Length: 336
Image (cartoon, rainbow, N blue to C red; front, side, top):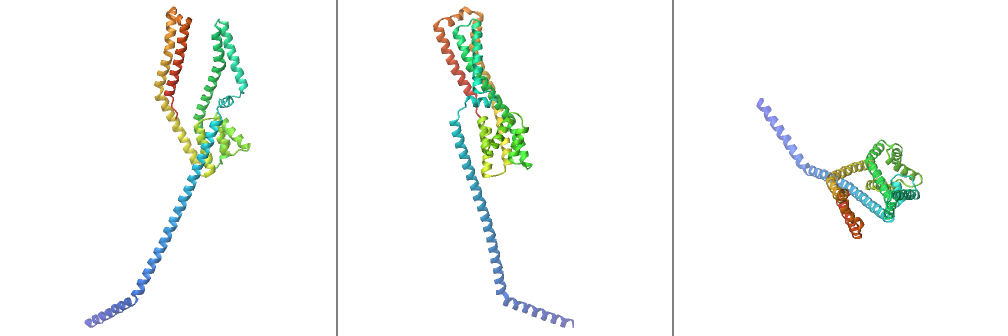
């Protein structure tokens, strides 16, 4: 009985296998066709997805190329405008007074210089100096000293501006990140910033209120503060207004660049301090020796001031000393 059951089970199993094999043989072509069709559909979908990705990447590249070209065109236009402005606008006395932060007019400044020169010439006459010396003092004190003082004040104000400008940019970055527009960030610096940055940004805000656009008002700042850092700032604002982009990130990068430039300038000054000290010693040594000789043996050196040939020697020495000082100054000054 048990053997019969195994025979029946084996027969049923063989029959089932045979039916399955027959069904698979009959349906094999259909199954393979469906698999191929499904595989073809998957390949088509994958190709469409890849084409969409390629198309999206191509569109992104085209957009980046257009934006890069727009930025390059903007930079070229700004560079041309700045070159034309620098060629056309030489630094006048009025602009120098504005850069120094003085409220004097050119006429008032000239009158002050003439008055100081007359005072020095009169003092020389009182102490019995020759007319040539008095005339030289009139020229030097009336024209040279006021110009030197003005240039010194301009340089000092520029240095103060460079110290405070990166901090003001950081304030603008935080203001823009907090949601304020650019105009409000400029007004914030104009109201809460430190001098001389506050007065210059106030001039930018006033120019904007008079009808100038923000990029034009920022570019106008270069007239009053002729520094490359201000030029960089105006270029960033102009490019952002034309090509768009993350203004807070651009200003943050500019602030970091300005701080690095300041560090580099301080490092260069420290490295060139020895050369500057040597130049000062070499330039002052002939005058010091002449003074010491005059104090110890005045009769020995008095001839050079009395004899006409001594005057010629003094004039030639002054010319050569001036040329040497100017050459040493050119050698120890570095532009960053």
